[in-house]
Length: 383
View 1: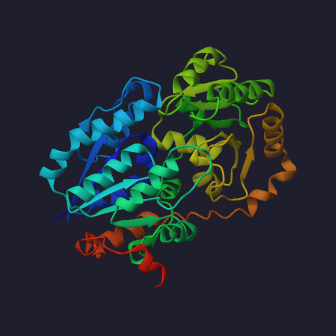
View 2 (view 1 turned 90 degrees about the vertical axis):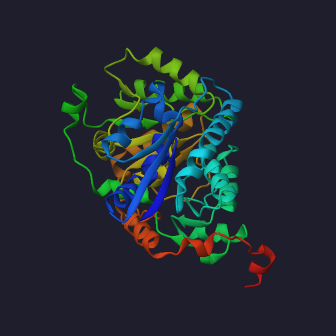
């Protein structure tokens, strides 16, 4: 029996691997357990642990790590709580493999557990890079150096990991597992699930705070423009990153505009994907615009620095936080004459079969051969 531990702290990183978790859980030769922490356990951020339970996955341990604060220090303290409270439990469970995804502070804890407890690990979605002045890129690259193997989502990310001194034999391009769920969900009736009449040409807004931008101002600008243009919008609450409180305060100001907005903290996968698949366009700064929107043939207006310079498809429309720029971007994506652009969009992150590729590799690879990481980057340059 192979024992695998998945580490997840927020809805976004869980969705990146949920399709793979399901396949591993259904394999009778694998014992999959999840270490659940962070925003998953917070009612303020939607208590997304419910999604894990609805997927019938086994939770090894729940660790309440999220500090009720809105500063950069809180992220570091949250990560330290996760490390302190997981070491003995992970050591006792003694998995054959640890899985973690993305670039939040929690994934570097997975890398540390892997290295110091001598447990092979796979880091998913490494090799990405963005020039938004945030911490995600640093955490992502540092975690890759601590990890045994890398399951990346495209060839560019593979090349970047090689340039960071990672051996090619440790890197597998499987595409983005997050796309798999777009092909396997129950399509629902939007009007029924939201218990209200939703206009056909609505927008979906997912905007998360940034430490280096006036997130509250940008969020208010977007809402105001959408209200002025009479575009009904379904709006997500922010994640738990610093400066989220100002966005929540704005939501409370706008929440009574029920003819213009519908705000939500967390939605089931089927409800969320139904909403996404039927929206006119997505706006904000979420990686959903980078990853999923291209597959669904939706324009994504990305406002501000977040996601800057990431690999993208032609459906992404970048704009500054200036009101005129935001208005111009929205006008572009709602112009019927530009819809033909979406017909030729090809998602560079995969075709919806990535979880199967990852699953087969996990069944095939002898991970003990990758535990010792003694390659000299200088020698790899000459290979």
